[in-house]
Structure formats: structure tokens, C-alpha cells
Length: 70
Image 1 (tube, helix red, strand yellow):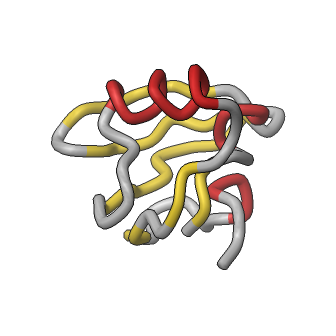
Image 2 (cartoon, rainbow, N blue to C red):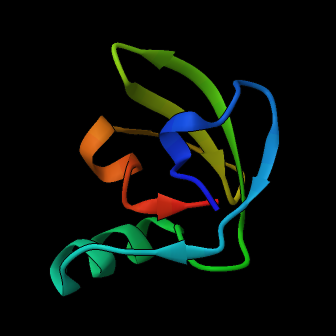
């Protein structure tokens, strides 16, 4: 298990766990970051990520991405 920040661009990954405080977890879950979902990193700029999840592109910062375990 590793944080999403360590994923290689273009590689499909499975979300195993979403951590952080309850409000952070709820925010990420509302965006589609739930255990069992597939996520693909599209690009990474200064640690911030653009990801494909549930047929949507979402930009998340490094802090949020570090709470998502793949």
C-alpha cells in the first residue's frame, strides 16, 4: 500500500483506503475516491495531481492525494 502521490502517470490503480479526518474523507468520497474504485494519474505538477476517476478528471493537491492509499 502506498499513497496516490507515488503512482506513475498513465497507470491504473485500485483505491484501497481513504484516510484523514472525517471531513477530509467525506470530501474525497463525494468526489468519487472510495475504496474499490479505479484511479489513473493523468499528470503531476509539483506534487499536485490530475486524475481520472469514475470517468471524470479531477485535480487534487499533494496533501489530499497523500490521504488516498493505492
